[in-house]
Length: 89
Image (cartoon, rainbow, N blue to C red; front, side):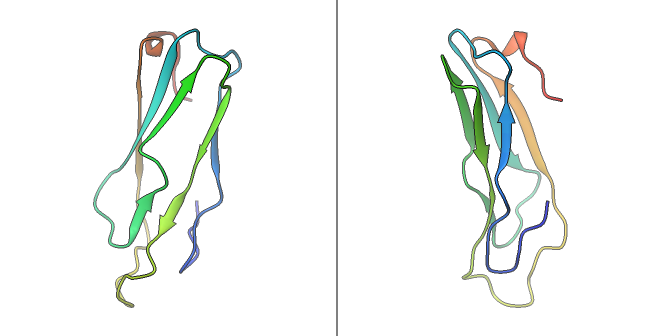
Protein backbone atom coordinates (compact mmCIF):
# COMPACT_ATOMS: atom_id res chain seq x y z
CA UNK A 1 0.00 0.00 0.00
CA UNK A 2 1.24 3.47 -0.76
CA UNK A 3 1.76 6.15 1.85
CA UNK A 4 1.91 9.65 0.40
CA UNK A 5 4.74 11.85 1.59
CA UNK A 6 3.39 13.88 4.48
CA UNK A 7 0.18 11.86 4.72
CA UNK A 8 -1.38 8.53 5.62
CA UNK A 9 -2.27 5.41 3.70
CA UNK A 10 -5.85 4.62 2.90
CA UNK A 11 -7.64 2.51 5.50
CA UNK A 12 -6.96 -1.22 5.38
CA UNK A 13 -10.00 -3.10 6.65
CA UNK A 14 -10.10 -6.55 8.22
CA UNK A 15 -13.52 -8.21 8.05
CA UNK A 16 -14.89 -11.41 9.50
CA UNK A 17 -18.04 -13.04 8.19
CA UNK A 18 -19.30 -14.14 11.59
CA UNK A 19 -18.57 -12.07 14.68
CA UNK A 20 -16.67 -13.76 17.48
CA UNK A 21 -18.45 -14.93 20.62
CA UNK A 22 -15.86 -13.51 23.01
CA UNK A 23 -12.86 -11.94 21.27
CA UNK A 24 -10.19 -12.34 18.65
CA UNK A 25 -7.55 -9.72 18.01
CA UNK A 26 -5.26 -8.95 15.10
CA UNK A 27 -1.91 -7.64 16.29
CA UNK A 28 0.00 -5.31 13.98
CA UNK A 29 3.73 -4.62 14.09
CA UNK A 30 6.16 -3.06 11.70
CA UNK A 31 8.73 -5.63 10.56
CA UNK A 32 11.46 -3.11 11.32
CA UNK A 33 11.76 0.41 12.66
CA UNK A 34 11.03 2.61 9.68
CA UNK A 35 12.00 6.19 10.31
CA UNK A 36 8.88 8.35 10.30
CA UNK A 37 6.42 5.50 9.86
CA UNK A 38 3.99 4.17 12.46
CA UNK A 39 0.71 2.28 12.58
CA UNK A 40 -2.56 3.91 13.63
CA UNK A 41 -3.13 1.04 16.06
CA UNK A 42 -1.16 -1.94 17.34
CA UNK A 43 -4.22 -4.10 17.98
CA UNK A 44 -7.60 -4.53 16.29
CA UNK A 45 -9.83 -6.20 18.86
CA UNK A 46 -12.90 -7.92 17.46
CA UNK A 47 -15.48 -8.46 20.18
CA UNK A 48 -19.07 -9.68 20.10
CA UNK A 49 -20.97 -7.98 17.26
CA UNK A 50 -17.89 -6.37 15.63
CA UNK A 51 -17.32 -7.63 12.07
CA UNK A 52 -14.79 -5.16 10.65
CA UNK A 53 -12.00 -2.90 11.88
CA UNK A 54 -9.43 -0.76 10.07
CA UNK A 55 -5.92 0.56 10.44
CA UNK A 56 -3.70 2.86 8.43
CA UNK A 57 -0.02 3.52 8.04
CA UNK A 58 0.83 6.99 9.30
CA UNK A 59 3.67 9.20 8.13
CA UNK A 60 5.30 11.37 10.80
CA UNK A 61 5.85 14.78 9.24
CA UNK A 62 8.65 15.65 11.70
CA UNK A 63 11.03 13.27 9.91
CA UNK A 64 14.07 14.87 8.33
CA UNK A 65 13.78 15.22 4.55
CA UNK A 66 15.95 12.69 2.74
CA UNK A 67 15.20 9.84 5.12
CA UNK A 68 12.03 8.60 3.44
CA UNK A 69 11.17 4.91 3.56
CA UNK A 70 10.64 3.38 0.13
CA UNK A 71 9.53 -0.10 1.20
CA UNK A 72 8.49 -1.92 4.36
CA UNK A 73 6.40 -4.69 5.85
CA UNK A 74 3.69 -5.11 8.46
CA UNK A 75 3.48 -8.31 10.49
CA UNK A 76 0.03 -9.57 11.52
CA UNK A 77 -0.76 -12.02 14.32
CA UNK A 78 -3.90 -13.50 15.87
CA UNK A 79 -4.52 -13.55 19.60
CA UNK A 80 -7.50 -13.82 21.91
CA UNK A 81 -9.81 -16.49 23.27
CA UNK A 82 -11.34 -17.30 19.87
CA UNK A 83 -8.10 -17.03 17.87
CA UNK A 84 -7.93 -20.78 17.15
CA UNK A 85 -11.11 -20.68 15.04
CA UNK A 86 -9.96 -17.81 12.80
CA UNK A 87 -7.12 -17.49 10.30
CA UNK A 88 -5.57 -14.67 8.29
CA UNK A 89 -5.91 -14.82 4.52
